[in-house]
Length: 131
Picture 1 (tube, rainbow, N blue to C red):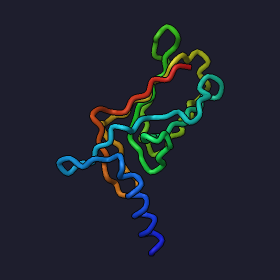
Picture 2 (picture 1 turned 90 degrees about the vertical axis):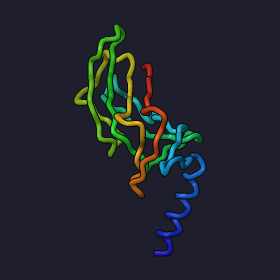
Picture 3 (picture 1 turned 120 degrees about the vertical axis):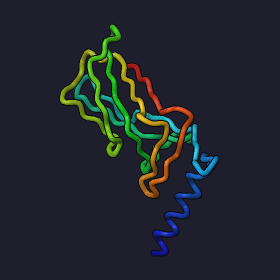
Picture 4 (picture 1 turned 180 degrees about the horizontal axis):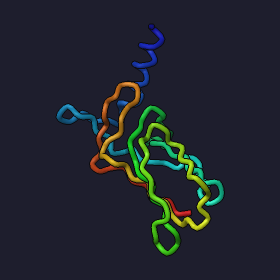
């Protein structure tokens, strides 16, 4: 029990530095999506995470998001919605014609899996990634 409390306390202190409490809500505009692994054209795999200002993946944060894939002409060739519980996306097949990917959060907040606390941003997270 002491170990769990100590771990919880340390993780709270570690992640609290970038969060600001305003009107009873936590805000952190330093959070963003980050591509950990990308092999969309060949195998159809995209692995993302949410990073803070130190550019390290924060494994206990999630948010629902949509993934849009476009070809070189700017035409949408794939669209899907994900809950965010898993950040590894596996398309049904490789998308060799993919030119860029947009990953966009569905809401202007992320959720801490351990405490279920929402951490708000001024706008939903969005990542544009060119292949």
